Amino acid sequence: MKWILWAWLLMTLPLAQAQEVAAYLGLGGTYVTSNGSQIDTFSDGALHRTPSLDGVFTDLGATVFIGRNWGVGAELAWRPTQGDYAGLQYRPSFYNFDGIFRPEPGNTKRFAPEFRAGIGGARIRYNFDDQTACDQVPGCPDSTHFQAHAGAAARWYFKDHIFLRPALDVHYVRNFSEFGSDWVPRYSLSIGYSFGRE
Image (cartoon, rainbow, N blue to C red; front, side):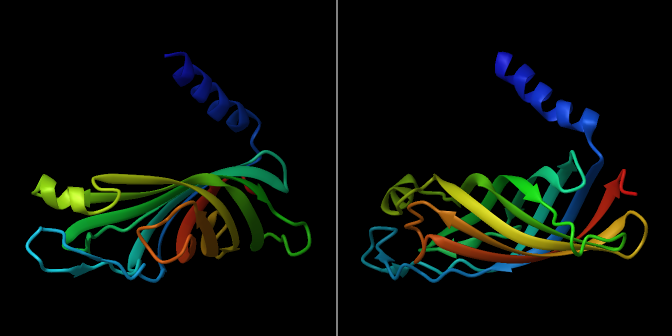
């Protein structure tokens, strides 16, 4: 119970001193090659190939700027539809907590670039009917990996508080053996609303 109190305190303390708070929602995509494995998922002699990681992802994020140039943020990106992973249905997601730097050159009333770096996790959640099939797929039923994250984005304010946010993110997912690379690039376009921006 103490950790809930500490988490609440750490989250509300920056809000009390915040100069700007923003939230955004959007769509994006990613692509990572297959690891090339073939798995006898259902123990029937039929080999199922592992897929590449791709598809449309939904992005949800929030930022708190304590000063004009420095802030913190959190993001969640998930694939809203399931995909086929060697005969099982799966859904990937990424989450990260970042420090944010917004450089003064280029930061205007209508345009605000930002650079982010932080840590988080990548999660692969499998959906299956047969435990034997799950046992054949590494990481099933739920595979979680530590990740480091870096990103660049820009906010274009087309109204006083409403912005479009194109972003390019790179996730380094430790031991992401379900796919062919530990490096996961992701791009997105979001729409958001900012409170407290002058």
